Image 1 (cartoon, helix red, strand yellow):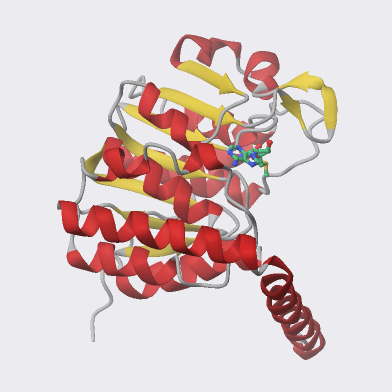
Image 2 (cartoon, rainbow, N blue to C red; image 1 turned 180 degrees about the vertical axis):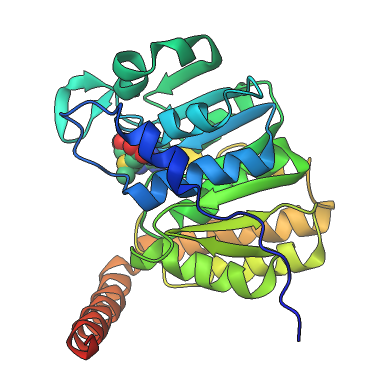
Length: 279
Ligand SMILES: C[S@@+](CC[C@H](N)C(=O)[O-])C[C@H]1O[C@@H](n2cnc3c(N)ncnc32)[C@H](O)[C@@H]1O
């Protein structure tokens, strides 16, 4: 049986050139593989505009800008914080300021905001990088909030798809139902419009055990935005599921935490067994 053609292959050569310019203080949220994946993925997307949720030092942002030099793509990055979480003296996106100032005309940041701010950017996007809060359902809700502002065919990349349990769970599920693939530690999917498969996938992913509270900001206006994508019945069903799971999580947080703790314990045991099995 022939395998479907891959969407993107790691671009290791470009990543090596790019990484050589990163400032020394950067703690490296991004591995060489992550840089090679981001550069390759944006080159396939050839985006007019890109958006990133969760920017921190801006390693990913710089890679996205680096990979799109020939397209002149704009990047908007959003972060809840004003500063880098491991070095409070550095503003969000500092890697771009310090090491890649030539990209600044194509780069805009919004800080102190979350996914609902995508609606304020007044753009339609061809590439999305999701790397904000990692506990479920954040990555899924970040994706939901971007959907109304995606062009058909846009690529959506979820970081840490092989790493953190929460994003892995969403990626694991999406990977089985939506056109997409794993590129290094990213799960990359292609948005093909508001298909029934996408709707059902989102409904199912929202059922997975929640690991964190949603801020109300992330829910307000959600229905209005989803009506731009899905028929009213489906937009209503998605909103109802978010509200119902949100209320349920708040009511039974301790139970959710116990289930989450047990899943993590199993995951840690699995990793230990895997590392012991390595030759
Ligand atoms: C792992 S770091 C991002 C790393 C970054 N993409 C890079 O390549 O350097 C996660 C960031 O997400 C931000 N964050 C956490 N929760 C968020 C939320 N709900 N919305 C937006 N950003 C959030 C944190 O402040 C943090 O800066």
